[in-house]
Length: 275
Ligand code: G3P
Ligand code: CA
Image (cartoon, rainbow, N blue to C red; front, side, top):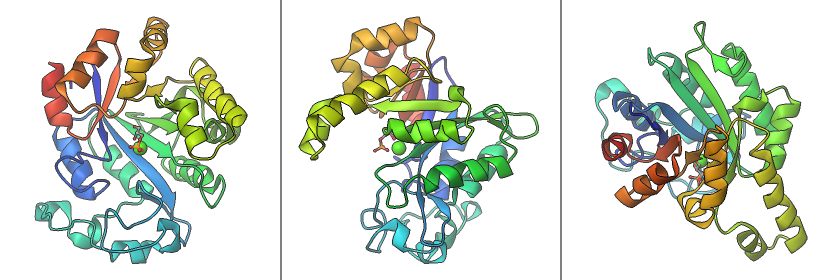
């Protein structure tokens, strides 16, 4: 797309409701270099592309994602009035399983980075990590790539260092793994009730991981709070994938520090700003 790689956050989620088939097809049509998704398990154990723990914000349903079967999720209204082109599927085609998103990436006909975020705490421990790797294995996952020509590159991200360590233990290559970092760090964890010592250890673990794996995913706020760390990662040749890049000022901040990838709700507009 441009020198800095552009990853569509929950699909082209500025254009269509997040995580829908329409949002991902729009992202591919916009020329995004990659597709980002969050993954939860349904009541019947299917990995689906969904951000929140519950369905309340993004559908007409209520309750935890994991309390719904895939069929029940597909029956929810996730379009909320949006009307995608008929070729992009009807209302019941918009909830995507991770396997279906893998299919969209493979069918794109060009190199695509598939970015999968594992959320924690999860009520089912590390079952989502196992499910994600099973789905990737079914699609021919080899050395971090999918497809007969390896044109889909996989990146597995989490705020939770334990999730990345579990993925590594299950066989995911280190170069596919990426810790996510946010600015508030220890203070935010403590505000959420995490013991201060545990919080410090978790954050330190994530920062240390950045040097061991395939890159690091800081937020825009983290960039402002720790430009020194970002500069060091860039100088060391790490992939630095910043989220969520929305404004011209965000783009400027990324360019100033030499980051290599941005995650954005609006890949077409952000690519324009990067140019
Ligand atoms: O790309 C990382 C970013 O997606 C993390 O935040 O809340 O949008 O999943 P969130
Ligand atoms: Ca995410």
